[in-house]
Length: 434
Image (cartoon, rainbow, N blue to C red):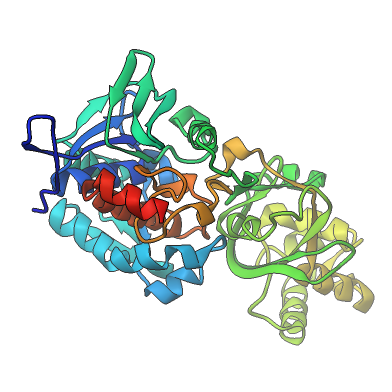
């Protein structure tokens, strides 16, 4: 164990006193890492339970990482990927898997898209594992209101019960999404009070809003193996494209592809864009036309609304026929060539106008945060305030859905915890002054 120590007033040595603010994924990893490295750690988390947001991730299943190489991983980071190079190589996805399986005793499995989940499909198992990992830390259910400085460096924290001295503070308070879980944006205020820049905060990995009433009509319909294109204004170039799953909701569209698409739309919304859905991307237009002709012949005496049930979900047929301006009660054998052409075109280009994101409070991830130019990427320590560290979503770093954002939390938490436990005020102050 690395037992980095500091001199006390009696000439003896003592462990570094580390305060970790925030008991989420990044904070728990930072606290456990620092404690394991010999630091005396106090964890400040006002919630009744630790890892509250972590417990609801992945629809309660917890997609905790993506088992890919660091290079592939960074290709899926949408904000400031280069900043993460050191942290990710220091604690890559395979190390996260090894940590939870071997250190914490949680069996994991890898699913489609290299996404890693606990075998139990219970996020609570990950929360429980991290809670055990920090069992040697002191947990104070108090909200940090201010950070204290002495001689320009961190000296402690102030809560509602008073001021406590610490050598180091790690801010791991999360973003501004899901405020009821504790990610209320308070960390940004604490950092800004000490001179840090907070970049514009926007929702990321968030559903998209549409004024089109067809979304409410189709609410609850999940589409699989469809292609999604987000087009710029007036039929402009594609800002995003993918194939996979999506969902209609009462306010617009959601689902894995839509959440990922939102990460590409920073600065593009509010404003009207278009979501174009190819309902049959595996079939080119000629093949789809032959399939449509075969279904119309097979069900030639049925109303068209019933003749297309082999091709499309039942609830989607009426809206699609309206879009194509075809009578749903027309007999299949009576469909004309122009009508069939319109049906084909609508199947390949079912369009929904998009005008905004859902609120930041509903986003999985906050895009924006502490300007990474003000943070040392090797240690996660502030370049402005010695003894102040950052980890997780509070940083202006985010990625696609698929386990990437939790891995960022674990990697930056690991880096911050290791560096904090090795902190020496005089040495760090000299480096800071240089």
